[in-house]
Image 1 (spheres, helix red, strand yellow):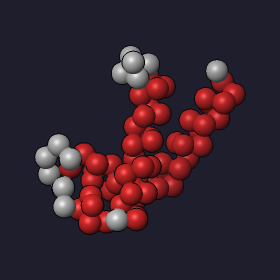
Image 2: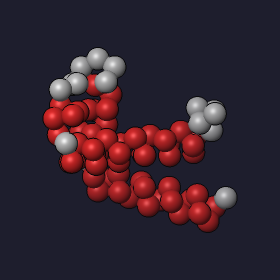
Image 3: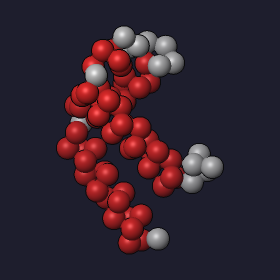
Image 4: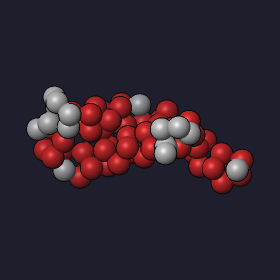
Length: 71
């Protein structure tokens, strides 16, 4: 049902990016061995989380405020 609600879709994508970046910081070999294919999505999300971390952090903060106070 997150596909049909834009805010829920953005929340799921942000959580995926943050989770993948956190897992890669703990165990880099877990995501680095799957750079291609279907599991490569997680590696790409981890790279986005690492390289764009200030932007991802701002998006997480904005999303948290919108969920807590706008709904």
